[in-house]
Image 1 (cartoon, rainbow, N blue to C red):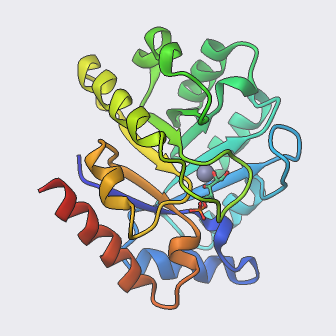
Image 2 (cartoon, rainbow, N blue to C red):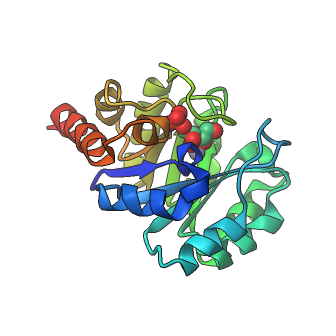
Length: 223
Ligand code: DX5
Ligand code: ZN
């Protein structure tokens, strides 16, 4: 699968959000990662569907993956699909009825993502992998940008890669948290194909150079 670099706009300058999104896309980003936090499921508060709708109205037509860190989650799924989400990714801990919530995402027309925190086992995939378009492995505990990569995520990625390959399904394997130029090669070698990076991209002055560096590190590690 073609590697995707997905800047997390949590690290963008929100006073110039539309320009920041256009800047990373023209610098070579494949998709936009949109982090939604509710100060309940995670101890932080970020942005909602109105912000996505504004970006769409401003002409941003890139693939947007919405990472929902909210509880309860079901009611917001339709709002994000209507606002223009391409992928909607949820945490199993954020719903009492995971199968129903994943089905709601599919019925909304968005692609279906499931995310695993560092301490959440992959075993649940046995029951639901047939419903998924994306599996996200968190390499930090969710809630904040700028945290350090948790190394045990590499083994988990490799395990998820085996499960995806065994399923025969076309599922993206995404990593999120602490991804930088100096560790993205290991992440790619462990099997990820979709790379979220917030501070690693928005914290630098030259987005095009950083994205090119990330891409080069992926290709040297996988070819
Ligand atoms: C954390 C978010 C991440 C975060 C990543 O809860 O899900 O997407 O923005 O930020 P960095 O890349 O700075 O770790
Ligand atoms: Zn995220």
